[in-house]
Structure formats: C-alpha cells, structure tokens
Image (cartoon, rainbow, N blue to C red; front, top):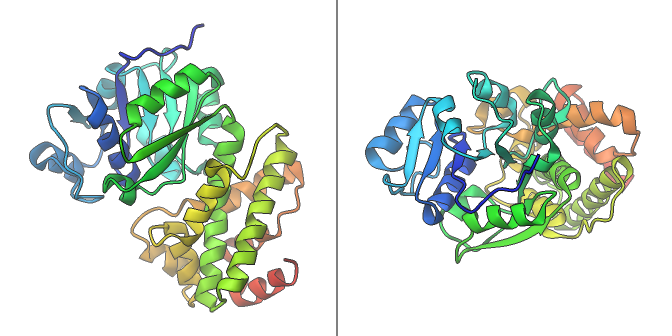
Length: 334
C-alpha cells in the first residue's frame, strides 16, 4: 500500500489537554479545516462559544471558521487523513474506545510522550498492533518543546519522525510558522523511547532538587541520565542515531529543568516530603513518567540494560523506598 500523504490531507487532533490544544493552534494557522475530538464537555463548550480552551493554555484563541471541535470521534476521524494523537497515554485507550471508523487508510501521528499502562508498549507500538497498521503510516512529533511556550509563540523546536522523508516534511509544513523550527528523523523507535525515558529522568531531577541537592549534582545526574537513555536505546534497538540531537538530549534537558515540566514537579513534591500518593493527587495534569517508570522496568526485563537511575525512580514510586536514602545510594554510582 502507498502510504504517501498529500498536501491537501486534512488533519484531526485527538485530545483536549495543553499539548493537544497547542497543536490544534499550530494547525489552524496553516490549514483551512482542522478537526478536533474533545470529549470533555466543558472544554468543548468553551471552544465552541468563546474560541478558547477554558482549562488548558486558555490564552490561545482559535478562529472558529477553521476549527471543527466535536465530541464524536468517528465524525472527526472520518473527515481527516492525518490523525494526530495528543491525549495522555494513560487515557488513550479510553479516548479511542468509541472509535468504529477504520484507521487503515489514515496516517497516524503520535504527539504523546508516554507509554500505554498495562500493555508495556509505546503509543506507536500499541497503535500498530491494535489497529493493524504499518510503521510506514505512523509518525511521531517529538520535542524539545512545552505546550505553554508553543501556544505563546515563543521560539520552539519540533522533530517530526516518519520512515518516509516526504511524509515527515509534509507534516512539518502543517505545523511550521515563524516561531516553530522543524527537524526531521526516521528513528521512530529511538525518538519515542527517548521521549518516554526523559519523563522518568525528570522525576529524578525533581527529587534531587526537592532534597536540596545543588546545581553541581544536578548537572552530573542529568549527564548520567543522558548516558543511561542512550545506552537503553542503543542496546535495545541498535541503529545509527545521534542522541545529542534535540529530539533526544534537548527534550531530556527541557523536561529536567523547565518550570512547566509536570514530571519534574512530581519529583520535586516527593523530594520535599510528600508521599507518592499525595504528590500525584496534587498534580493538576498527568505526569507520564509515573506510568513510564513501571513500564520501562518491565520492558527492560527483556533487554537487561543497566539503568540505575530509572531503577531508583521505580523503587521510590512503586516500592515506597525512602527517596533520600535511594538518592544517596545512587549518588555513589554516578
């Protein structure tokens, strides 16, 4: 089958959070028709009546002549060729549960930086198996970028990943503007796993800051996170890739350092003394790294890569290990 997509292909966005909203905003600047599946009635009514999302990045205004929001996922998917998944990975199966339209003639793009809980698969792997797709019709939107800065028009960088370079550039053209710079890659496996791992490492960075460790230690910790990330990706799926590129190292850095990073905030709360349960309850948005820590540990049983930082985060999140003791033990290994 020919998985080439054309310039005239309509886009749809699945999800209503900050990143889904930011992506819908980017598309609406370049496209005349953008379909948007919003299953939250408050958000749907806000977009339809006021032209903005009342819950997430609410300063982003939409031209309602270009945006077609709906709570009918089948209507949205039916009217688009390119389907951009931007719901939290923990809820993706719930978002897609009402879907009866076939995805076999669609091009699916994952903008989700997480892993499917209970399935131990990345979003791309899950969609391929669940909907009988080919990786040739699946793409990835990687960072480094935060929705809050993208929506404000601050200079941001996105990486579009497809096995076919023409498809990647076409999707990039639909997202590009004066404040968004694009790069391209064919490395679906590496970029997607880097985006998952960096959320775990951002929790570790937040824990260190919450415990009172300074910049000296934090720089070493994040450097070792980059090394551990590269080691896992290369040993589990060897390929010619540059993990110093923005989609790998850049995304790791912004997630570990940014005030917008929800994973860093989760680690910060735990480092400051909150229990894992209370820290999760205090979060207003999903911290993908919480689910990723369990899934990556399970996946690594097969690959057996040495991952002391990811193991430390898992022990604190799931085994109730004291964060101060585990960070001190980790510091002796770095």
